[in-house]
Image (cartoon, rainbow, N blue to C red; front, top):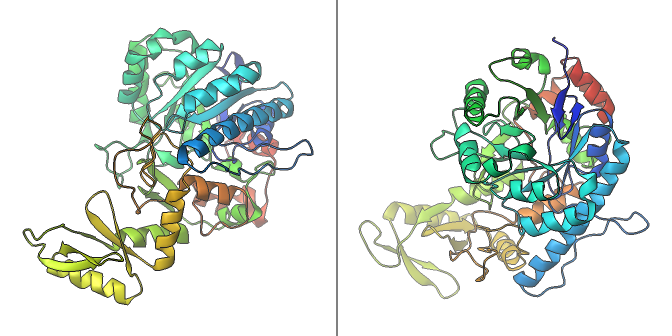
Amino acid sequence: MKPLNSIRLSGRDVLPLVEGGKGISVSTGESSGAWSAAGGVGTFSAVNADTFDVDGNLLPFVYKGQTRRERYRELIDFSIQGGITQTKIAHERSNGQGRLHMNVLWEMAAVEEILHGILDKVSPLVHGVTCGAGMPYRIAEIASSYGIFYYPIVSSGRAFRALWKRAYHKFPQWLGAVVYEDPWRAGGHNGLSNSEDPEKPEDPYPRVLELRQVMREYGLHDTPIIMAGGVWYLREWEDWLDNPELGPIAFQFGTRPLLTKESPISDAWKKRLLTLKQGDIYLNRFSPTGFYSSAVSNPFLDELKERNAHQVAYSISPVGDHTEGFPVGARGRLVYLTAHDKEMAEAWVKMGYTEAMRTPDTTLIFVKPEKANEILTDQINCMGCLSACLFSNWAQNEAGTTGRKADPRSFCIQKTLQAISHSEEVDHQLMFAGHAAYRFSEDPFYAGGYIPTVKELVERLQTGD
């Protein structure tokens, strides 16, 4: 394979190897600091990051507020403190090598306030801010105000054009790179648009070339593009290296750093990664953000599939084919189904799915009583972790609501990501992973369950493997 040449990122020449940021205590200061110490770009997450007491013990998020608004304010304080904590850990572990980036999601709650809260305290220790999951127009202004580079995550040249025209053209000197995240292959939340078929992955090369062509329109010939999603062996991307058509390219690894000694995920999670087969990662649209997301197919996702499959449309009065009365709720209020849907609904009830829950789309889903109680409890306990949540109908506006009915077809993402990050229970929680995660079980580097250090992984990547 061609030798890897260094690339200029956040004001320093580094290896073109970037650690992808993963929220809720997965990309920590320990892992990102080690990645930076190895000469690349480490990325810690400021999305509800962990913090510790003076003895080094984890401080759990304990909410005392009785209302969503009160819990939302507590979450902001937790997030700022956690981001400061992980920044300091990453800086210490990096030994002054590489670069350190902080990752945030534009659709997370109070993202601007949290960014300012963290950077006001530790901005000299952070070299760049990576941001996706939405259209982060203001990230350029915020990052540049601290003399920090910004790294928007996009999945198309069209998205970058919109960001540049609206905001980024005002802060060109602080644009560190553009992260192209493959919307079919990356883990976590994916940037698929309504015009793209989730069942038909596209070749990333022409899409990245289109992005480069858009960037060249704005004079960004030498601004790097960071390829993210589906990258495993760099020898498979050799034609991207030193390619004048694409310009400067770096590669982001989000899934492979999960299986390192510095990775904070549980042993159960690491062991599960080593067993994955091709097709075990499921691209779905259950997330309360409304985005597609990619995660390991497991009983958690199976239940959501079942919940959505046990669904029929209803009318509040007889109309068209909806002529069959069906009692719903404790009071047995009638709604109207088609004859076929009524037969299915009655069959589900006989199977124990006795609770019919209304959705915002005038449908009913049928779940068992214990699941209905769990859904309602989670909706009540919402702490406002997103700017707007489909599951609970929270929104960080004055009204505190999206104005739509809460959607029981989704789930509390904060609850499940906190659970999988801080316990050995993985089968019944959301387990984000990129679509190449099955390669853990095929890659000889991990034979016999071997788990490398971050330094060993970075050295391995430079060989092409």
